[in-house]
Length: 135
Image (tube, rainbow, N blue to C red; front, side):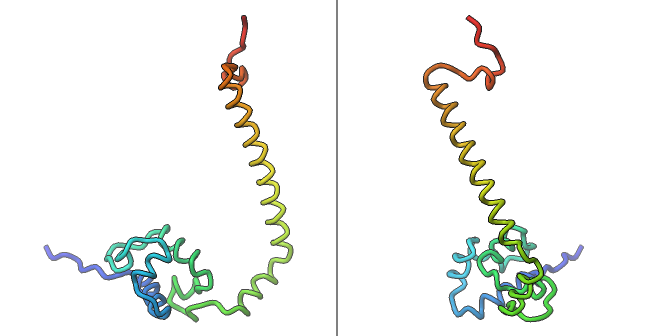
C-alpha cells in the first residue's frame, strides 16, 4: 500500500511567508509567537493554539489572507478604522464589563482571604463546610 504524501498546510505556508517578510530568523519568529522551533515546518496540521498565538502576536495580519489566501497579507489601518466605526460604543461597553469583573474579582479575593483566616484559626465556615457548628 502506497502512503499518501503529506504537505505543509496552506495556512502554515502563509505564516512562514509572513515570517519571511519580517527580516528575522525563523528561530526569533518562533520565539516571538511562543511555539517550538520547527512547528510550522512539520507536516502535521495547524492547531487552534498556534493560530491564536500567531494572530495575537501579529494582530494586523489579514485573516482572509491567512485562511483563504485572498487579499492583502496585512490589514490596513483604514480597514481597522472602518471596523471600529461599525460598532460604536463597543469600547465603553467592554470597559464597563472589565470594571464589573475587576470589582467581582476583588470581592472574591476578600472572601478567599476571610475563609483562609477562619481556617487558620480553626473556625471552618459552617456554611462552606455544609454542617452546623453545634457544641
